Image (cartoon, rainbow, N blue to C red; front, side):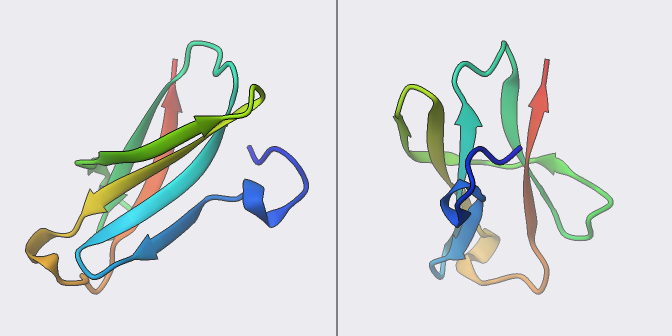
Length: 88
């Protein structure tokens, strides 16, 4: 759920030539939820993505997370989907 009324509250994704970089925001506290990043090539079959934490910052109400998802072989796939899931 987006928090706030600006576009800054929406997740963003960028490709830098070797990886996808995903930035998203979470409410503080996250009420004992575990968040994970998943990837898919077809939107039907999802698996846990290998991620590298780039950074995180909290303002006391939300935490902004930035993670990097490497692209196999360093080349952009024709289709690559990434999502954040929340599980109790």
